[in-house]
Image (cartoon, rainbow, N blue to C red; front, side):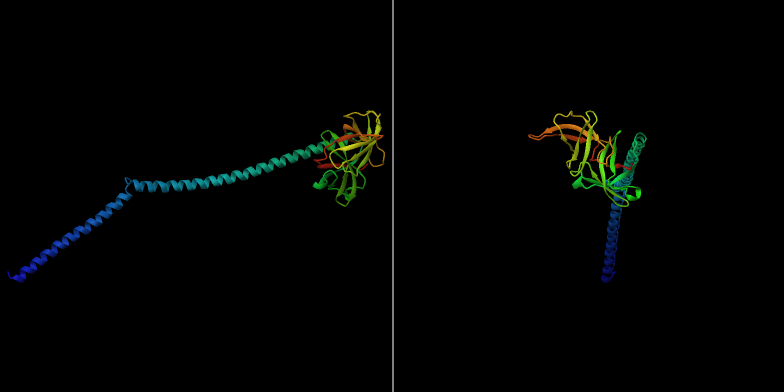
Length: 269
């Protein structure tokens, strides 16, 4: 064999060995990658398991939160409905109770009257005047007396001072410009009841020797031509005597609460 032929044979042998090792190396790398990915996908892999479980938990928590949010929204809507129904129910009960009182009062009284609702009340003049929802079209006239009901009792409120077709203004008895002749049925004593612009009134021009005491009821005397006789005004709570004055005065609390007026009765006859 010649020298050239021997060299070619050696080169061919070396190339074959190189290709063999190269093929084995590539195969090993590919197999290693396969094994790595199979490991990650394998249930025995703690990393894959944790990633899968966390993803599953996040999905469950998200769906649960959506469900809870919807339930919360529905509960809030139902609560609003219940509150509205409860408020409406209380209003209906109050209206029915007020109607019952008016019917009972109509049965026992000799007066004809028109019932009305309070529309407007000035917070700056709380004890001075109110606006009601009935006017000339309903038969309201100026100077008609106005009363209200509280429980099973009635009390004088004041009189009509302004009238429009669908509304009227009441000057309350507690206004400082209001005055009415009062009468004490127990002792038959007369005096003038005047408003003070507050929840109290004064029974004035009483002679010191007159028979009066705390708790005495004062009613309208019927004199003056506006207020019928016998309408309760208030009760005496205390007395005030001034030096060198020929008269004493009594402090009254109104028969009815002037601070919570809703429905009034305007006496027509």
